[in-house]
Image (tube, rainbow, N blue to C red; front, side):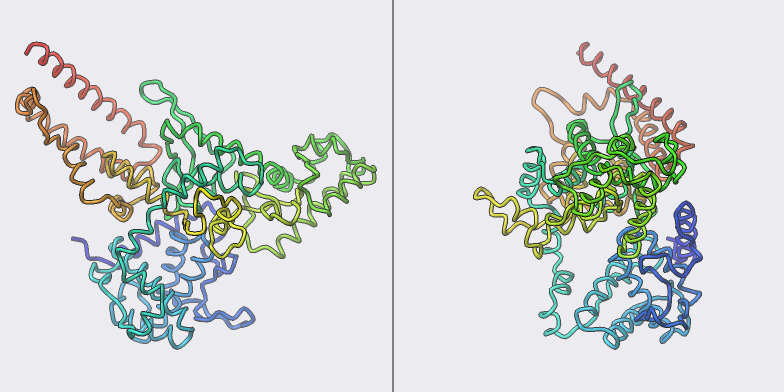
Length: 552
C-alpha cells in the first residue's frame, strides 16, 4: 500500500496545475478574480495593503484543491478558501510548518478552536462540515491516512441539538434518504417540459432539468456546455450515436457523455429550446469578441451610416418588444427613427459591457461559446430583458428556482391540487445520484459508470450507489447467473466454453479496464481495436453455443 502522502500531494498539485493551463487566469496570481484569493488572513480585508500570501507549503495545494473541486462553484470556492486559511493557522500553531500532508486529528481539533475564535457558531458548523468533506477527499486520494475520516469534534450536546448541519452529518441514514430525488419532482418538472412552456424561466429550468436526466452531470457542468456541444458519431456497427460534449469538473476535463437512446429526443429538444432562449446573449458576446471592424464588415456599412432594425436582424438579434426592458424600447425607437449610427451602436454595446462588469460578480469571458449565455434580467419575472447584454448563467440561476425561500419558485408558480408542491424539495445533485444508481442496477462496469459520470476515480462510484440490499442480491443473481431455469443445465452450458479461454478473456478485460482509466485521445484507436477483437471472440462463442444447442 502506498503511504507516501507527501508525493501524492505534489502529484495532485502538478496534475491540476497542468490542466489549468488553458484557462483565462494565471495559476501564479494570488487572485483569480471573483473574490478567489490566496492570502493568509482568516478574515480577508480588501482594504489591507499589506496582505500576506498563504504559506509557501500550502498555497500550491490550496490552488489545486480550489481548481479541482470548486472553481466553477463560487460560493463553495469561497467557503473552502476560508477553510484552508483556518487549516494554515492550525498547522503553524501545532507543527510550526504548514505541510498539508501532516494534518492529523490534533490539527483538525485546533482548526475548530481557531474557527470559534474568529467566527460565529453557525459559521463554525459550516467549517466543520467542510472539514469532514476535506478529510474524505484527502483520504480517497491517498493524500492523508485512512483513519483521518474517523475524526469528529466533541461538540457539546446542546450545540449539536442547535445545529441542523451537524445533525445531518451525524445522521447517515437521513443523509442517504435525501441523496435521491423525490419521484414527484421528476413528474412535476417533466410535466412542465412536455407542456412546451412559453414562460422564459420555465423554459430555462425545465430544459436544464431535462439535460440533467439525460446523463449523470453536475449542474455546474451543464452551465459550461458550449453551443456546439452536440456530437453524433457512428459506432463500430455503423449505428449513429448521440452525445453531448462536456467539460467535466474535478480534474476530469473534456469528454463526451453518450445519451441513452430513449433520452436522445429529449436532449435534442432541450438544446433547441436553450439555443433559442439564449440567442441574443450569444449574438452580443460574438460581436464583442469579434471586434468593431467585424461589425462594419458584417453589415457592409461604414461607421457613421444609420443602423436599422433590419441590420439588427441581420446580426442575429430576435426582437420581441413584449419582453424587453423600457430602456431597450427607447433605444429601438431611436433606431427606427434613424438617429443611431453603427458606431453609436458599438459604443452602446461597450457601455453596457462596462456597466455589467462593474456590477456583476459573474465570470463572463466565454459567453460567445456558451450555450447558457443569458441577457441581463432575462430570468427576472418582473423586469424586462436587456437584449443587448450578455451574462454567463450560473448554477444558482437554476438552484434558486427550487429554494423554499423563493416565494415564486417553480413549485409555487405551478401549484395545483394534484400535487402537494409545498412539501416538495429538490437539489440538482440528486439526479446525478439517481442516474448512477440506475447504472449500477443495469450492471454496467465500474469503469463505464465512472467514464459516463465524468469521474476520474472508479472508487468514488460507491458514494453514488444507493441500491438496497435486496437489489444488490437480485443483481448478483443476474450477473453471476446463479439461478437455474427448468429444462436447462448450467453445468452443460459451462462445458461448451473452454476454461482456459475464459480465464484468458477475463484477464484481457481486466487489463483493458486498467488502460481505459488512463485513456487519452491518442490511445482511443488502439483501445477500439482491442474491443473489436474481443467482440469477435465473444460472437464466435455465441455461435458455437447455438450450434451445440442445436446438436443436443
